[in-house]
Length: 451
Image (tube, rainbow, N blue to C red):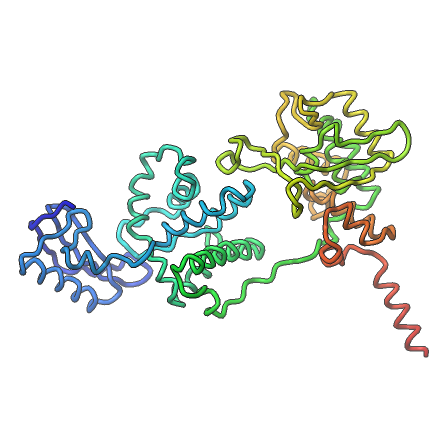
């Protein structure tokens, strides 16, 4: 520890450059400027008095912290800071989490900091957390020079984890996750995911005896209600789906043609985009006539390279909500069998049997296939439909498929099996997309009224 007796003090400064009035105590330690702000003048005067008394008593001060040794010991937090425990939390979940889950965890963690001078821009702090501070040590790139001071400030300003036992701090954290970076209300699903991350972090703190109880339970705070069902306005009918798929092959030099089969799998087999991206030739039973069979065993979700195990943008993962080596069999109609046979004849397969890849043999990025999809919408739909939510995302093809099966009278148990849902989730999520329920209900009520 580097100490000195060279300490000088300045008068308290009243600050009006912030949203709330504050009072700044300024002093120097070994000719290095130090400062600390307080919300009231009384607190500022008390702190300055403690500094003066320690210097008058001949007490040495720590050059780095700028405090007399007695005050430095008193200010040391009991237990980790929020930043330190956030690093522990991310590391504890890293090995067993998918890349997108790792990304969600880090994006859901905010910086709980004290109101110290020289606060860096919020954007710089977010960049530091996501690209360096909240990654495992062996994954951290070299810290850019511009972020060195940001890290130093954040380490100094991060609140002790124990401060979350104060309901006011917890409420401030919940309020922070409820708005976007521009101060607008965040989407309900975003708020829900971020609260889940905070909840899991605090549960780990309880498990590791850093907190006696999860402080979220002591705060009466209601998150915005998130939609739990599919919006029927996004679901295309069979004629619209055929028109959209027919428009895809003509887009670009070869990109549309290479993606046609992938989109067809989303509609005719209700595959998720990452499941279609992970489909291989050995997963496809494609007879010359009649129905075929897809055996889905892997998904290839996209994420930033910093989150994946392979260091590539796509990792091979097991199926969503399934055991590691579980598979799902999906009978496919002759129209999809024909599409896939044509695709394989025209473009072949990758070394591992993968079906859908770029002309350079790489998996398609979500931005690439989304751009093709938007162009297909412009070619196949009316201007009014293009401006609407109708099939606004490739994922909506899956919704259209499941809705079609339910409306065709396929038992919910069979639809759930093919789509990879539980029956409960299936009926809850797609309740608004099942046509004919209102008419049947009205007839039943009319019959009852006549009795």
